[in-house]
Amino acid sequence: MAPPFGTRFSVLDHAAFAVLLLLCGFVGALGWLDAHPQHNPWAPLSLDDPSGWATARKLVALRSDPAECRAVLDRGAVAFAELGPAGEGECLRADRVTLKEAPLSPASPAATCAVFAMFERWRRQIVEPAARELLGASVAQIEHLGTYSCRRLYGRAEGRWSEHSQGNAIDIAAFVLSDGRRIVVLRDWKGTGEEAEFLRRVRDGACQSFSTVLSPDYNEAHADHLHFDQADRSFGGVCR
Image (cartoon, rainbow, N blue to C red; front, side):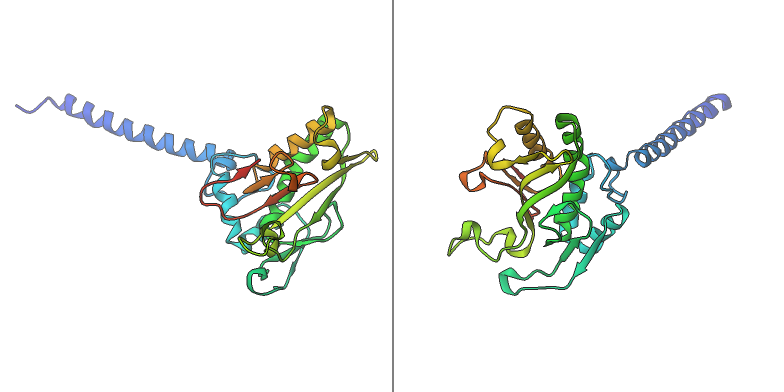
């Protein structure tokens, strides 16, 4: 015997209500993702977004998409200039940019867009907040040891090529504060004060952006600098 009409209507009504709930949930989820772009895989990367579920994939994508990387710099109001290719063979640098207003010393080094996009993200989200909180000052200059060097790892005659050979790395040696103080990796890393705490915090924070972060804790070759690069590491990043 067929169920009463009222029963049939109730079943259909419940089904429609369930579909409506699903649609509301979907719309709500989209709204939540719009409000939290760091978790939204479809939202363009912003240098000012905190790290989220989708951040790592977006950062990795910049390494092989220089055009999108330059768009990230534009969206972040980062002044930069595109440079033509240079070098050849293992030292060919097809993707080269320089930052026009970054507080780098020496000024205007050339590197891949991915390195400088992540440098700016690190500077804004990690370095400046750490300097204000721990040292009570802003960062006036970030001293580096270079971005490009056509060589193999550790200058060996054989073996893998350094990420510096393609300008895909930067070595940070010191930070000059707005009050004139200078925080030096070689001198201050092994200390116990605010300077050492600052250096460790900026090292740890760099791991949120760069695929490779090496510090004096890694080996003696890095005793005087923090090495950051954007190597394509399918197995995940390195943070030491």
